[in-house]
Length: 369
Image 1 (cartoon, rainbow, N blue to C red):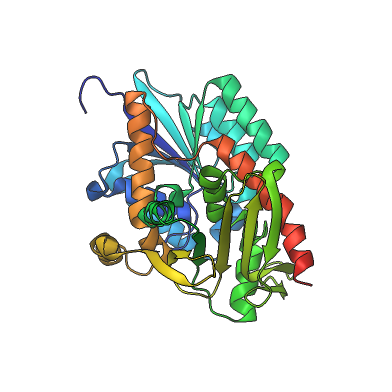
Image 2 (image 1 turned 90 degrees about the vertical axis):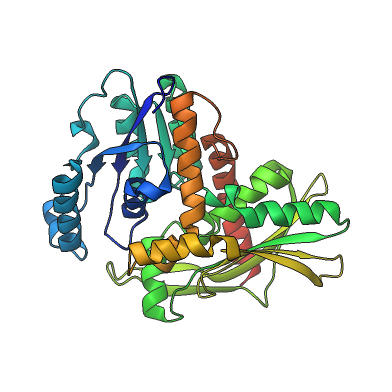
């Protein structure tokens, strides 16, 4: 660290199960020297796996092992409550990374504002509802805390390339396609629907909606029309394995948004489509001209290194490794130097994105009936 930069100390809130949870991946990435993220991971808060019920649940034993290793080798301190994290030291800027279940975020966020955080990095979509996210935004402003969002595609090369190609080729249309690699079975998708019970638009496709808000000026007030591609899309009601409750959600979805100022963007998401994300530029007739993919050849080495370093994790962690590294590097640098985190979505973008997700979900479900 140079003398002008503050040290950034990270409190990770919501670690989750090793190999499966985003919080665990954040920890692993910060601790990896090669990631070059100018921040120290000092504290991990894990309410679920450190509770009595959580210890004996699936993933509990693996978490306990992970905790033991990090305590012994890295001196990281673990807590079950945010309130138990010790006060921040002088000259250190504290960054909380909140990567928990969406329903727990508002209360965890409130607790993070109480422990002297300089900034908060909040995983998408931020909160279950617009009103909760708006009050989190307002509380953070009152406390003078910057809030950055984990919308990794805002900094993805495939997005930049798709947009610049479309900008230099008139009368073209862009589709952002997001694939996940779940088995196309009621068991696998039922587990997915249950774990992401806020629904596809507030979860998986929230990244693409954030792109539409950031780069295409989409807001609820500005949408002139939205149309689902009925041939492509599919909506199902499935049973969640843990709760036995039924969840209705999209397994595949494609739709086009047109705005009042003549912008147009299409979004597609397929839970069983593979591991990539794609920007597709087509001409006015809908014929594909070019596609840019994440990951691309340049990312191959980073992803291969991640796969070799951490075997057996969810495939999308490896694919997103380059972008999530970029996000955390930019956020850490902005906090240390007091600058701007270029391209990183703020909580204001998140509020608008969540509004769009809430507005579109019933409209698209209705169109697919």
